[in-house]
Amino acid sequence: MGYRPRKVEVLTLKVFRYYFNDLYHTQRLLNWSNESKNQNRYQHRYVSLGPVHDPTDSLQPVLDDPDMLQDVCAADFTYGDAIKLNGFLCKKHASSDDFFFSGLAYPRSTDNTFGATPTLITVLNITGLNTLGMAVSRIDFAPGGLNPPHLHPRASEIFFVIDGELEVAFITTENKLYSKLIKSGELFVLPKGLIHFQINKGNDSAVAIAAFNSQFPGIQRVPNALFGSYPDVPNDVLAKTFGIGINQVKKIKSWLNS
Ligand code: MN
Image (tube, rainbow, N blue to C red; front, side):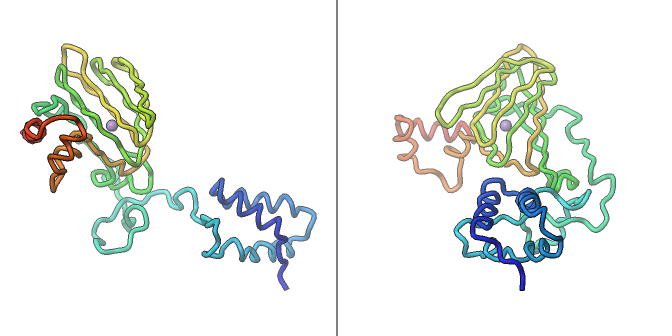
């Protein structure tokens, strides 16, 4: 006969798991409340958390471990049709090269529509980033170059200026704009999922490094999403959205794709 937790204990566990998403602390709480009871009884109590595990429960418990359970998990892309929970499978044998990348050493051409070139490096480029929740980017700017309004759906960003002087800004969901003119050695924080941009205010080229707290932050550029999607967002939708004519919509589309 196992110990059956009282209703109030089960509820406390549910609330803790729901709000703190944390099995460790809920278990500690239970341990603490049960200190005076013998170990055997405690073990019974531990395995008798049936109601919390019930998948039909309205407060779905989260039973995942909050951190990775191995030191390294270099991504193995060879199992194309394998089930992936949130990331990639681990290589059986990782090597030093899984953690190395030299592709950000040199500037890339900024000869494009916006005069700026972001180079986002993710787990797809550095397999050793798998499960680490990190990615990095180098952004090169011509004088006056603009990294146009964009967002990263899965990561916040730290934007660090290596060389030059850039105006950095983000806009909240309440349409408040936060911005700052920053120079070499200074940084600006861009919260997850918010639209942001950077523009080179100096007379020389500029370069920045951005760090992300996701191995695959994603990038969605606002102008390209609206005016460069495939299939197209209908011209009349864009015309009405921005209060412009169909010809202006077509002009923007062809300019973005030039
Ligand atoms: Mn960004």
